[in-house]
Image (cartoon, rainbow, N blue to C red; front, side, top):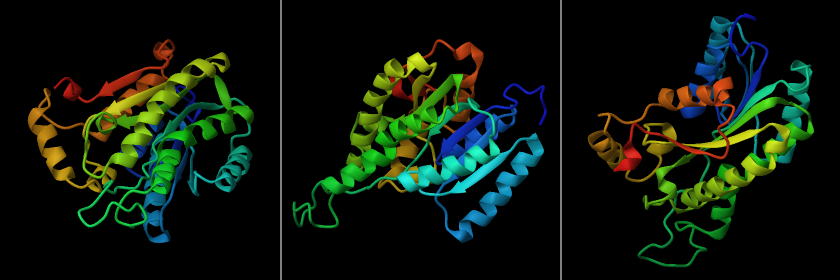
Length: 272
């Protein structure tokens, strides 16, 4: 461990860090000395190259990266994480950042030409909405309480969630995720107020259209990417590294007074 680095000795817990914004944040934070506990869900085939990549990043930056291929949305998964993490991060109050980057949602329309019956597997059900809302919104609260009750957050910790423009406008088959992101925006405000007494600062990043694996699963994503690239004031779409830079910024001492904010990281895309 290089003790001269900015975040030497500190930890980030990244929920959903095998790709996209989570992995980009991991790469940025480790370059500044932060240790990472990264949670993801991968098959044995896809996990092998990921773990090799994580080991390479850790060695290059002189940090520890703990990979957890567990279900972050189940209590048993959280309990397993806590047990294994505590065995390595032996000091209390070591977590500087909790990053919620879980992208697990149902992408279905509300109705089809054939039927409006929600029991049809091709249309969005209330169970789909509930599952998506927990994965992409409410689970942040459970994880915050978990780390807080275990006395793992340090006295100046940061919580960061991710939302999208799809929370405010229509995207095809995006209803469940839109509902979840809108819920996350409200939750973030309340967390910013009620967890501030513990030194926690809770903020939300609204990234511009970014070509990630999650976005590519949305019907019509190619058109979203094309329009964003053509219309963005900065002349290109958002990159994961752009978002990672702001996540890093929010962890710095200079960002101490930022709490309860929704920060646009999109080159001005939201202005149009």
